[in-house]
Image 1 (cartoon, rainbow, N blue to C red):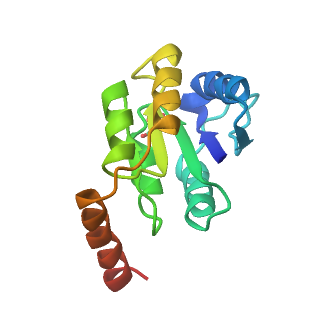
Image 2 (cartoon, rainbow, N blue to C red):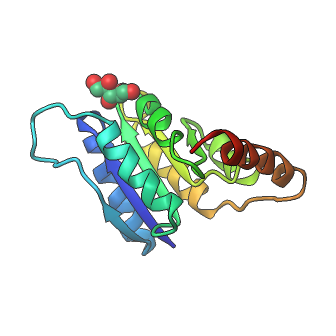
Length: 151
Ligand code: RB5
């Protein structure tokens, strides 16, 4: 599995912890920034959209996006066709959003939860599988909407 990860300035510390976890788990990843040494504040869409596009076009299997709350990242990522980005701050939702929503990106907020919980969430999210069946029909309705209403 190939994972794309990025954060804005509000998620740098959590991103570094999640990257350590990916390395421990032996998961291939690419870090799309922002620059950890940069003291300036950056714009989360500049990080969310490239990651979302790379997941949508199949270059990466999953994406992990972190900002202060996770909200801006999730809003931006979900603008990209084919992206199902889940804003998650608990382990139960991490499991269920894979099983029911087949989420391909997870967003989290460094100002909302600690790095320990974030790593637990990421681990569960990476390991959980889509259940298919009735959930597949629901995702099909979203995909059909995207096809007919979005360019
Ligand atoms: C940056 O200050 C903050 O707005 C951003 O990290 C994020 O929380 C937006 O949703």
